[in-house]
Length: 401
Image 1 (cartoon, helix red, strand yellow):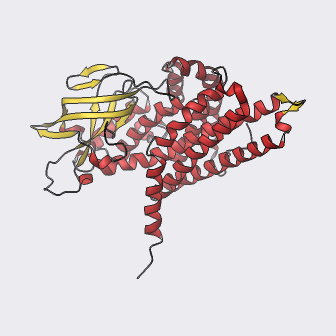
Image 2 (cartoon, helix red, strand yellow):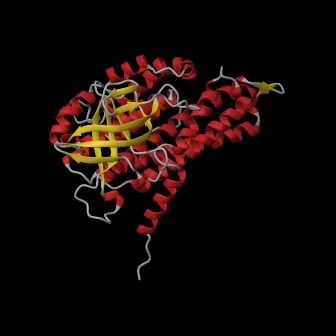
Image 3 (cartoon, one colour):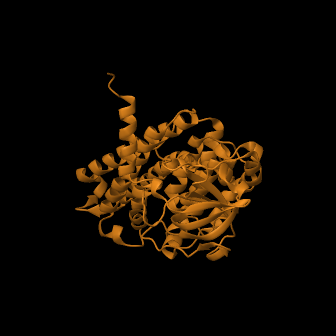
């Protein structure tokens, strides 16, 4: 283990958890990640191993069978997992966001029913806000939930569901106009529905279809899908929190911790790219000596290491802020923005250090080069993060008078 991306002030338990995950990554993920990624194969054995380690219940309270750990512990584990293969961290992240939303906003019955199964990895979560035509404009969603007797009927189309096929529980954001007068702001007429389904593709239950996996440039192995709702009936007790009109706030709370997670992924991928770059620079010879002895390469390594450290520090700060009970949208936005941008730059520098071999599928850096761009758009683009940060700064530094 190198000097970079260390975290001060961890408890013995936190250090032990992170160390255990790091060992698992080194032994069970890194040796097979590139081969599985090239085949776009779901990592069944890896997921089962993470279930056994308790990672799926890392932040679920102990009373529901989880480990009851902090966001910081979780983020550091995600950093380690993404260092091995970013797709695996995606499998966990959507599950974690749904579990977090249930923990924070669910009714007692919803928590007691879902969280123990989620902690064991028996129920796996996915969540859905985006739609084919709206991108980052969540307030423009058109998927509807209409009251019908003792439940709701859902109709619409969702896009970019990570774990859409393999999940058995999907938290879906819909528009519900029930009880909201004309002119109600869009974000106050949204509701999160908890949809239970069987894993798989095609029509997985009456009114619910998962068409198939979207073929992606990178971020392979994990299934990314559409979700089509065509008169799906959902009972009223599957409204998250038992109250309509709260969905936007619930989802934004989930995405806030999700952005810390994406920042952690960026840190993990950047750290791995640095490791690959500095190792190759000492093995590759030009002009009679290792390229690591050339000043141009040393400058590049210095820049890469500095970016790895800066991104890690900002990510840790954002996680600790949320753990302290404070609002962290500013810090999470900064961390996600910086970590994803720096990740892209560090990966590209490692790619350049590899020269022509970086373009070969035999070398791991080729996989990282295709994975890094997803972080630039996942959980909100860089532009969305800057908009959030800018607005919060204006709130904090408003001129009086």
